Image 1 (spheres, helix red, strand yellow):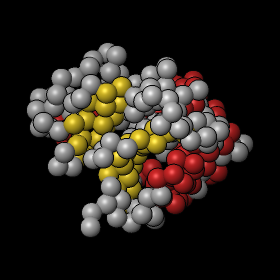
Image 2 (cartoon, rainbow, N blue to C red; image 1 turned 60 degrees about the vertical axis):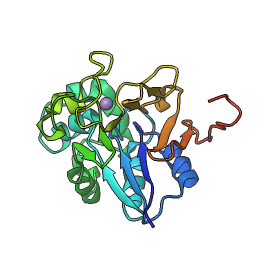
Image 3 (cartoon, rainbow, N blue to C red; image 1 turned 60 degrees about the horizontal axis):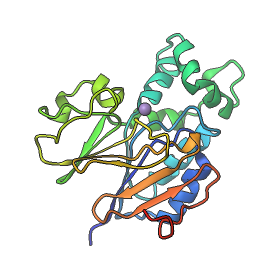
Image 4 (tube, helix red, strand yellow; image 1 turned 135 degrees about the vertical axis):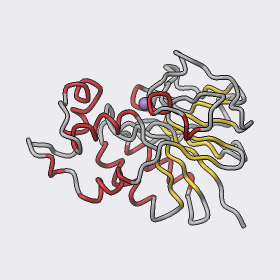
Length: 225
Ligand SMILES: [Mn+2]
């Protein structure tokens, strides 16, 4: 018996949405869950999101990708860089969630272990998973971090990847909160923190789960989707 392969889009501190989403999905030890990055910043409880993802890693096979927001955070909390850029892009909310009072020791060792476990991409027989974007004619391992973590689909929408695999990505949110699906590429960053949804996609069956920032599950049978 093989498990499901489920991708989860940009969470951005929306821990209540994540809790409800996982309650609906009920991941088990046979399932692979690929979180597409951007766990922290902007939303209300980044610390709670990381706590829940650590718990999730004990419930299923969790593959956690690194988003550009984790890169900005780790530049500050692990690499001692100037905080201005990160704070401008939502880091203030993240530090608040850790009850930051001037000392980075508020970030538990377990969280650093989680951050250290993040990968830049994940690939299966049928799918490519990455945070932001890809170069269609290159294997993912040759793609730059700039492309994989930062390049918006609005700057460059790639043609099908040469591997023939379908790409599942986040990072470029739709202001209307809807999934962007052009066949060879699916973006499931549906803007939860800004009034949209947190989206999970079962990549093989096409089943979709969505929750809002308050944890309400979207009823997809009555909305014509
Ligand atoms: Mn991003």
